[in-house]
Image 1 (cartoon, rainbow, N blue to C red):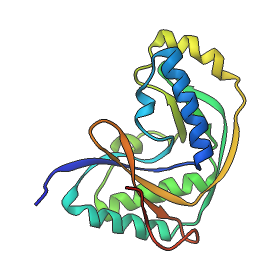
Image 2: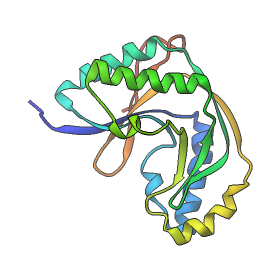
Image 3: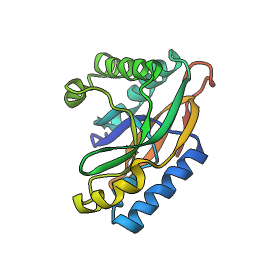
Length: 193
């Protein structure tokens, strides 16, 4: 029996060309502003914050996410410019559309009722969808230097989110563990390992 608990979170990942663009920006922050923490995960929009789950119960988690995802429809996602959580986080702004807000709220409710996973912090603040490019290890001084460069920088992307992604922390970084197709995108979960 493997009672070891591992850390997971659930997110929407953009298509590869958008991931490549976001990774280039993360690399710029690493090289110019000594901020590398954002490189420890693929570009993503967090829907369910990190939680611990036993690997013995991974099939329960996978089945529950699969059932949830198949009941949802693919949703359009719009990325527009950059924003910040002053004084340490710079991110690609994700527009708060009704479809995205509804998906987030439905997932949070599902995780709590079906799996007993509750994020108390998320319950106390509004959902602020974003795609982080620099955080945590971005010093206040480097934030002040970087923010003028990105504050008015143009960025416009749109994509259709076709699946939820379960990410697993391997002790060093976050990796995609499994994709769960939203309703009409396909009918079987896609393992990414």
